[in-house]
Length: 341
Image 1 (tube, rainbow, N blue to C red):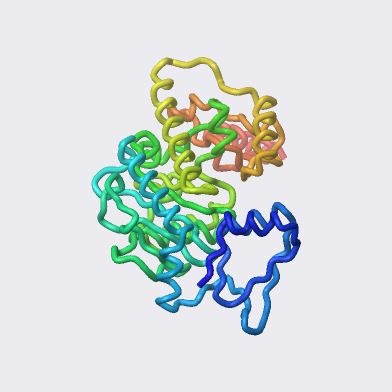
Image 2 (cartoon, rainbow, N blue to C red):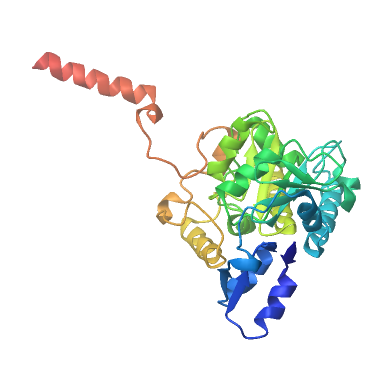
C-alpha cells in the first residue's frame, strides 16, 4: 500500500502539475489532501492496473500493517505519546484515564490503548482502528472509548484528532452540570467558544456516541456530564490546546467567583469583534448569526452563584420561565375581568 503523505504531496505540487491520479493501493493522508486542495490540484480516481481510490481502505491485514508502519503513522504515534505525557504531567489524567485518537486516512484512526497510563505510552502501544472501531493493527487493545471519538469524527469531518481527559476544574463543572458562562476571557471565546454540558451516559456506550455526534459540528470542547472533557482539533496538539484552554478558563472562574466580582464581563458589541476574528480563522461557533444583544444577555456571575439557570444564548423565555407571582397576578386579572363581564 502506498501512503501519500504531506511531504510527498508538496513534492508533487512543486512539479506544477494540476491533476493527481489515485489508484488501488494508494491512500492519501488528510494533510496530503489539504496540500492538494490549497494548491488547487485535482485528485482523480483511475481504473485499470492503478485501480481506483476508495475512502474505505481494504481490511487486508498486510496492507493495514503497512499503513500502520508508514512514515505518517509513526509521526502521529510519537505525537500522541508526547501529548499523553503532557496530559499526565498537568494532572489532566490519573491512573489509566483519558484517551487520544488521530485520523490517519479517511477511515482509519490511530488511538491510545486501554488500561495504560497516558504518561508512559510508547509508539508501539498505539493501535489502528477503522471507522467502526474494529482494531486493524497494533498489539495493545485499543481504548474502549473509541466509539465516542468516532462519533465526533462523524459529526465533524474537519476533526483530525480528539483528546479526552479529566482535568479537575473543567470536570468540576461537568459534575455540577454547569456550563461555564461566556463573555469573560477573549482566548476562550476565540479559540474554543461555548463549552456545553452533555448529559451523562455510560463512557464508551452507543448512547454516549449518540449524544456527542450532533454536538461536534458546533463545539470543539464539550463537558461530558459526571465524566470529563472531550475536545477536537486539526491535530493532536491542537485538540490538546483546546483542553488546556478549557480547564484554565474553568479554573479562573472558580477563583474569580470568590472575589465578589461586580464587573459583568465583555460587552456584547466587543464580543462581536471576537467572533469576527474567530470566523476569519475558520473556527466553528453557533453564535455567529446572533444579534449583539443576545451574546451576553445573562450575567456570568449570576450563573456561577446559581441565580441564573441559563448561561448561553437560547430560545426566548416561555411560560416555564415566568415567575409564579406574575402568573398569579395575570390569572387574578383575567378572573376579575370575567366576573365583571
